[in-house]
Length: 314
Image (cartoon, rainbow, N blue to C red; front, side, top):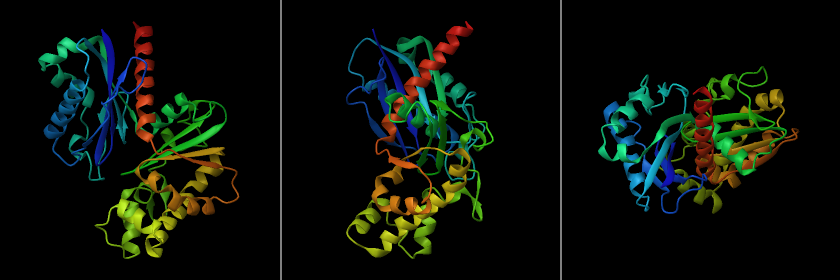
């Protein structure tokens, strides 16, 4: 019987999903992108997650299937060990604030007849910060060095961040923010997340008088075709990103910075501004255009580690 894991990379607008085989590889034809429905009520959201799980299982062509677990890359604030969401104030997933997703989803799945036939004896659901899983996947794949110091950030609806030293995540130390999370750190007249995020990008659009209905793909195309106003938008965002990073770079002294997320697709337009702001710091800047693939690898590794922990406890 073949063993599989269902993985979800949850964002404010979309949920990217895949099925992984027992070797942590994405099963062909199982990668899919779904709407996140992050503004729906609690019941709608929970039913949506269950429906996505069922859809992903249906993509597996083999008849004898065993599902070992589900892994969620989820933005914070979130109690990842307990499985409880604490997102509020960002116009996404607010209806599940304080909800233990692991408990709720297990209860709902246990009522599905197909689930009893396909779940493994040690089936479980794990959650982790999306930036942490991206970083873990980059480590496993060898893109992030197992020695030295690196910072990994993901920019989407909000900012995710992970600090890595000698192959380990650094979460509680004087030279990194608590949990390794930059998003809540003071920046300008607010916090980092209000600037280095989709809404921060939209704020810059508004300040420059750019049509707010234009999405990032339209703006990227215009900038690449030589439109000076949209080009200045991306350059300004890059400058702001670099400015935000300076205190973290000064404290942690990383050798490399890895950038992922939807904004990474426009790296050719903003990276110059970021480098200019960080001039004088010995720091290589790497871009990951396939963040979800690294995140999926990270989820697989997390499930493997959590099973080892459970086995050792037993």
